[in-house]
Length: 406
Image (tube, rainbow, N blue to C red; front, side, top):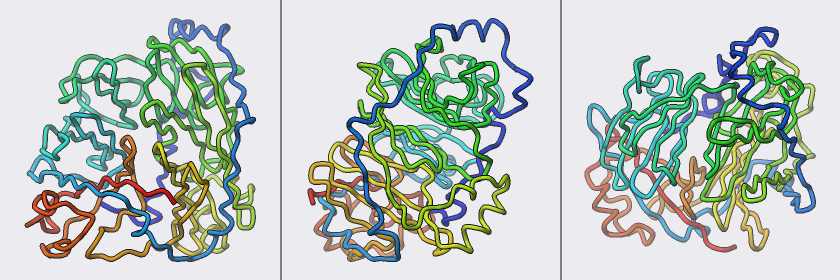
């Protein structure tokens, strides 16, 4: 289900580890387990940095999206009383299942198999294995475990959602992903990490499986509380990219050598949001300023496949989101605020919400007209049968799509 522009931007400085830095909620044992004295500081290398010039896209413009699409696969999500999907925050896809973090009761988790058949809605509550204050999800492909992050704990489940165990965390953070030998955690500012001492304003933590802090990076002192997105670590196979709200650098972490690279820098200097806009402590003030002035800003949303990546800019004055696709091999870019396509050929999928291998993932709401894609050259006969008979009352349909070289 699609959100409006402003509801898509989340006010997420809510109890996600924030608190009085003078008081630590962590025990001496937890702090000692971090082994802070041996923690290395990662300085981002810039020798492979690529400047992405987004200035040509800083206005309302249409672009021919249909000619960019190479392949489309549809997965309708089964609709039952238990499986109803609310607004989607995040999608994690494995070879066997699809995990969706949605807006159910403030953030919930629902499991479907790869054909879209309903498996389980994770229980909401505060008992063992139940989810409450869910912030992020990831999947450990080596151990075949689903891992969720709720305040202060990682919870571990089987692929079908059976509870295994939980582990208490020794620091505050916002997102995480899994490494073969540990984890990466992404914090925002004001996460209540005063117990880290001189390391408290670093926002990237690399740990082993027991949360020993091996290295930190991405130093960002607090800039003020405005609006943020819900995801700043983007992991697809071995590719790991990390972003930061209102910071135009996209970082790459190479686990095999423990190296952090400043990989891409977005340049939209002609209409970039002034730094002083970030000094306001309320969303209302920020929203008022950005609605009254024609500036663009980047909150860190990013997607990446083997062959392409996609960047997003926001403009509250115009009331638009801009999407820009880039072919990694040629460096060519295409995008704009309005994607042009034949509605009888492809669905509205130009603003993806996830990735899996070399596919971008979007979601669409079913429509009652069975014949709309009857003659589509992009959609297979099998997929046409899958969506036949669906109506607005059904769950969303996930659309996996690949792009051509351009």
